[in-house]
Image (tube, rainbow, N blue to C red; front, side):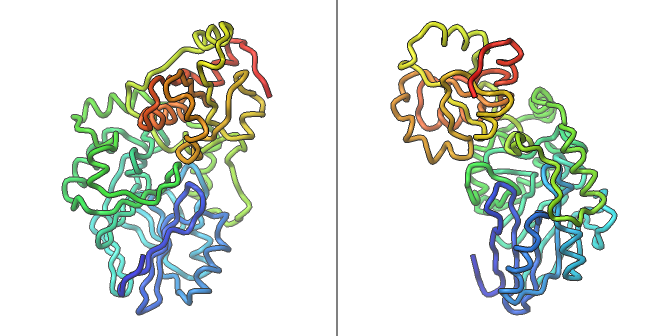
Amino acid sequence: MTNEDLVFEQLNPEACRTYFVGSPSTREAALVDPVLGATEEYLKFLEKGGWRLRYVIDTHTHADHLSGGRLLSERTSAEYAMHRKAGTKHASLRLSDGATLPLGGAVLEVIETPGHTKDSITLKLPGRLLTGDFLFIGGAGRTDLPGGDPGEHWESLARVIPTLDENTVIYPGHDYQGRKDSVLREEKRANVNLKPRGREEYVSWLSAMKRPTPEWMIATVRANNEGPLDPSLNFMPADAVSACMCEPAPALGIPEIEVEEVSKLLASGGESERLVLDVRQPDEYVGELGHVPGAVLIPLPELPARISEIEGYRDKLVIAICRSGSRSAKATAILKDAGFQDVLNMTGGTLAWRQKGFPVER
């Protein structure tokens, strides 16, 4: 996306998004939410385009991946910018609400949007909003991670969203379904976090979905505060999927089925009349927990593009399964939206299945 004042690109192939903003007239650039492991790729991109990195910006202290902010700043002499409440020791620019970062003919405006974390910011450009984890496509970042607060998130939404043009294009910090952007008008219609609710109701809704913070995420936050410099460093275990780590569960009301009922159904036969759909990653499907016997594997990020593979079950029972019930809840919502008539999310996922001692395959 290019005009005479701005070059704008999303650089990462994975769910964690890094945004490049550049001024063609001055060749100055900014990187927003860089991933530590991709540092060399970013530097090659900048060199190839003849860009001088002026700013490296983290929209918040990340818990799901390590930031390349400090390393890029040291490699390029760029200013490292974060919110004034960020725990990092290495940010040279401390940002507050209303701060501006000039970039050639463009200006990045800082909006304080706490809730996902205490130090969350959103960056406003003409017609665009880089929301970090403040607002996703169809959801928002979890508020039960370190520094999160559902009440603060409600207040940020109530303060910021009404001030924005409905044609503003939203660029989130993550997306797990391959979507690049959205329009605020559509988010106000369909995003579960933007459903009209009072503060008390919103806090109760998010609090009901509170989950423990994995140790590896606590280690990631600690490392990001210290400023990691080793691109090979990674605290995320192989069986962890960030899709269930940063987003809250979908709206309440997702139809569910207990593991005991699933066990009875499987024992009763009639396999042709139902589909057990496992939406974890392939290594989880054959890993320590195994999978429910007969379950078909379609990882959640691939599901929208592979729905044609299960067309024959549109009018039959589909039971969605993941590790704990979060990703499968999202899969349930995706399939219901796609017109599948009878889709149920297995409560507690494969963890609950194993805890009950039911058999698995690998």
